[in-house]
Image (cartoon, rainbow, N blue to C red; front, side, top):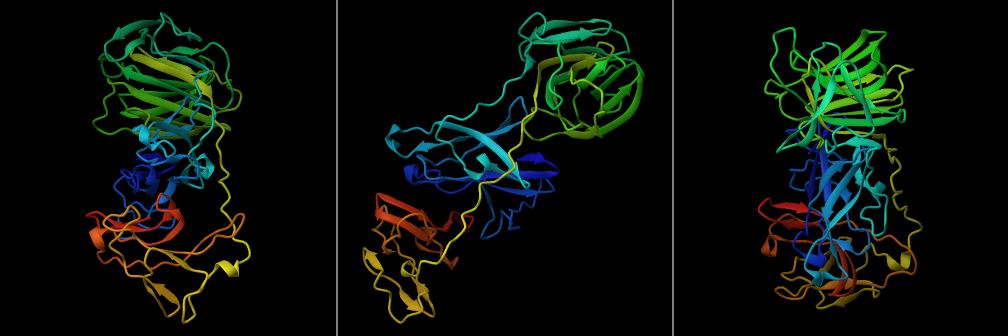
Length: 440
């Protein structure tokens, strides 16, 4: 589950995880205003319904990759989200493993989709972005960053974090650690931050992320403020705090443990969040305008020696992909390849694989569910087929699949592209498992 723009998105993988080269195992999503649900898809269907909802995020697209579910998301240094998932090469299913796949995750009209709806790639694509300037605490001083203010930043080590930098200053004025050079106007900056040491009331120190900086008297800094129990973002102009926004943090928030502060600045507007691990579940978020005239130097800051920082990163902000792959548009109806089942007898263009089954009834073809499958378990299923047209085409049908229990509790019906049982593509809702749900 991830939070984005006030929505909580629940990702899940669908059917076919254990079907090998025959499985699709798509990734779906639903969203809710509450992390407790209910989660609905783009059409407003509940994910817990008998016929559950689910908006496609990633699916098979005709290349060699199938069984592509079991996903997780991460964000690169530029702010671009990526999806990692398993996949199976259907051309070499005997390999026996499911390699890890990775592709860009886009957000279009409030919904996630991989590569603008083109889904899994099968060619070389641009890799996740690394920081323009970054430090993981591995050097005596952070490369590409300089201090500004009274005091020093000292490298320390511990088992959990490895190397990190601790501020050494008792001044109430900020000690900064900033990019040596200006970076792009639209940036993403992030750092792991924690507060250390106890102080008398009124003398507590703060630490945080500086997302815009001209000099000590003109900057925008997001503070972890233990006294206020909040994420506090302050705009300082000519030595005075001219704007302050905050997000209250929950009662059990541990300021002494590592927290990730991240900030994205786009077109003069900044969004700042604090989380445990930057996995799309912020504990507090603040949005504010960044004043004109503040060069985009960025870094971290601390007062009264309270701050320790690690994994500091500044990068040019990503460019979002906002145009979805166009949906196919049906052309003129191909009458010689279509059937409304309105006649008394079945059209001669139909043929059967295996034994004929079903009947014409009231303008529909009614077909009892067979205790069979195209894997031949327990017996080989039948298929009603007709020749496909030449060139590009769309196949569609109206389907009514009763939810009464079928053989092995897995009744299914739908469309099929068929050469033989070893070479077919099937699109069919199926009733599955103890949930008694019908999934596509």
